[in-house]
Length: 394
Image (tube, one colour):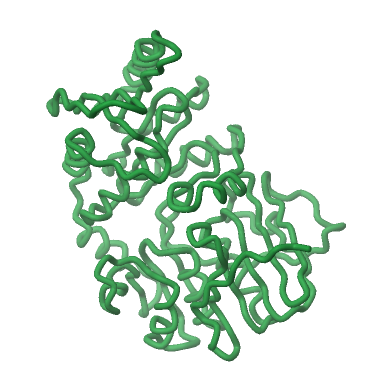
């Protein structure tokens, strides 16, 4: 039995679950409580959906669909978890989707009180408590979600109950109800950051292993968050062309930059769903010859006078690292620069970056939060860490 807890966040659609998950994970990270958010709903959302400009979010958000392959992947991650999990699930689960809920240990239920439907809260409460009971989940919190009004904390033991307000994108959750929920989850996630990090780093396949949040603090970022202008200092701090293992939460452009800095030496990444993995080699195949690709994999190339954009569209589904031959990259023409974009895991981003970088003077990675492209490699080093605006295609 996996000893790490997995807390499901469930409730009817449009109750604010994804926003609550985002605020909860931010609060836990601030307290340095180790965990990972497992998106068990293929809606294409991540932290960027709350941190980026909402007009940008609507442009790039791409809802996927549940299917058997997706649910099998979620079940695999739950069964072999490497950290305590917050599990963000869909609002209308089928019986097949619900079957993976039994792999969780606890539940936070968030039920919207809808002014246009007086019975919605009562009905939603009954449905989701029945799900929790069927799947043997301990309900550690039951919250009523309202858009307007006042927070009201009713109980903290044995579960947190009450009313929580303002679960809207870009809003920061505060107040007694949210604080009680954070404290409840913190007590449930009893593993220390130091102990789990040490255990994971001891399993590293190479000598030089970077704990990115700790390294950020070492280089002067007290909050442990990386900013693009700090990228040159990071790369100057590290030896080049040296086997490297990368661990911890950091932006995708940090992972891309480090993986390129190590070339031609190998790199390994710690994936919270998979453990230590090495980026695979992806085939380069002309578009007319591509076939048998993994579901949802459809990279698109946009050509500009001085650079290319490779948008690696995943249709919000999990991609299988075990079959890289079914994740082909298109043959890319030579330009000065290459920009990589797409909602993809770090192992896939680093694989694409390492295979394409040699053909370009500079390489950048799209970050929705800045609505721009972070330059992660440059033959003259002058552009590294610069944020390029999104180009307008004429």
